[in-house]
Amino acid sequence: MLSSTMPRVTAAGRSLEYEWVGTQRSGRPVLVFLHEGLGSIRQWRDFPQNVAQALGCGALVYDRYGYGQSDVLQEPRRSVRFMHDEALLSLPEVLSRLRVENPVLVGHSDGASISLIHAGAGHKVKAVVAMAPHVFVEEICIRSIVGAARAFEATELPDKLGRYHRDAKKTFYGWADVWRDPEFTRWDITEYLPRIGCPVLAIQGRGDEYGTMAQLDAIEQRAGGPCEVMKLTDCGHAPFRDQPEKTLSAVTAFLDRLKA
Image 1 (cartoon, rainbow, N blue to C red):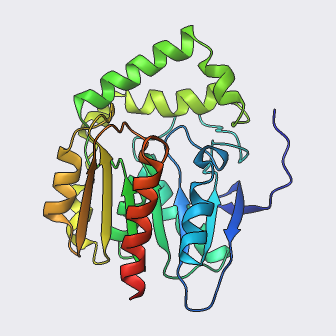
Image 2: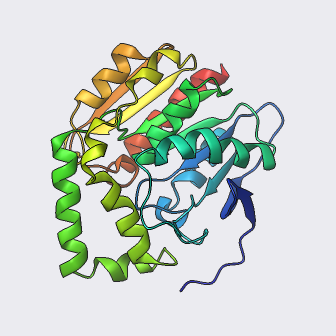
């Protein structure tokens, strides 16, 4: 188990670890980073710091419940509405307790979906950057998660995840089991898209093993506010890792235009 001295905040009854990077300045937006379904603070690598530095602002990065060094998942399995719960219950408390108003939400995968739900539910959000977002379930995603479960059982994946998470097994199956639940095939958040009034930048790799470009197309067609999309070649599910320079450039340019 990793030890940590990072600060913690309580949200939805759970103790969550968080970190501030960059420098908070008056008049500058606060970035809030929401990690992927098997992610954590550390798995963002230096991306939050690089974005914050490029924009001259502060950024909040935190481990959601069941991830990283936050409280270990206690339930036998997550609810099929776990992303709704994060977006509508936990995230508002995190922002309130840490005095973050009108944030820019930067989400990856599940974190991108959480960002879109939160913005579409009427919360005050300056902008959303959604990387590899899910707005409905595709067969390619389920196939990849089934493959990931086989890898978890037969490779060194548990050890690799154990570098970042207090309980790698609970973290992994808390993610994989809910996505493989037959009820989850009906999961769909497109109803939130028309109610998103803030600008949205949606980025996805053409080689994304968890979703097709239909995800970005749905966001572009249905988002209620200004929407930009970026479809990256030679890029899989993690644009900030697979194409770091292009992703950083796109995100900073998008947010620079908001400042202007």
